[in-house]
Image 1 (cartoon, rainbow, N blue to C red):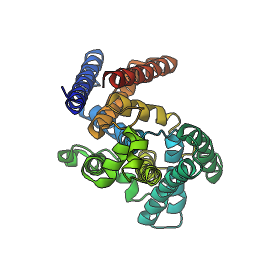
Image 2: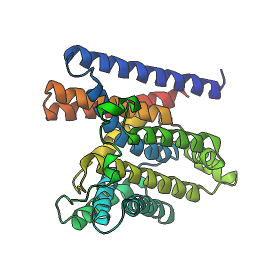
Image 3: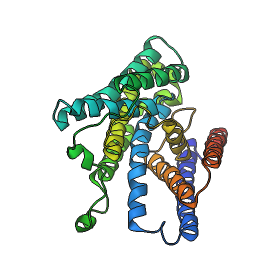
Length: 321
């Protein structure tokens, strides 16, 4: 069997296994919580909660495929919510949206420049910017939530009314699905996407082939920053305020979602569909644990174990190729 055929079969197996695990998890919580879990409001809640993680996971997929990592995603989401809230106090909603998403894109640009121009490891750079960006968010918000006037931005992830249940989910959920399609096309149907895979698979070979690996990495971080800014927009729509303390630890859920969805921390491999399903898995788990009253410290242990297991599976995949 050729390497390409082996990778395709392995990727399909991983995706199928994740789907089965997600369905089994949902079935378990439905059995434990028959009156509350399998209800439309709860399904909608899970979809809304997963939208923020999924949007951020789309960007993280690009970063992991290119062979890097980003630990500053949670801080960038928090910064975006604060920037949007502050901008809404003096500007129309669409301008505030641009400011917020622009802040996320700028954070991705800074990460990319530090990594590619200073040749510093992504882990170290984003570990530092995670603190810097969080500090900027707290400074702008004066260490408290930032109130904002009500606009159409608040409705992006607001639960649909009974009269509009034909929509199934709020606009933000459908927007995330559309963005997932676009990122999938970008990654697998464009020259840039193929270069991202090539750099992540073997950067030296990509350079020999004429690919400017540093520019590809920079582009991946900028696009990921934009997607993280959109995740921040979704988070703002959920909260209705800017919160500099929100999304602490989000990066761990996002990385776990991408890796259990088929992404490889060695680079060169990732699945947009898998990342979204992985985000749904992580969100369903958190939602169910909260409803059954599992202590928060136990939830941390379980999530940590899943991350370790996901990395272990990644190593198994890598050794089998």
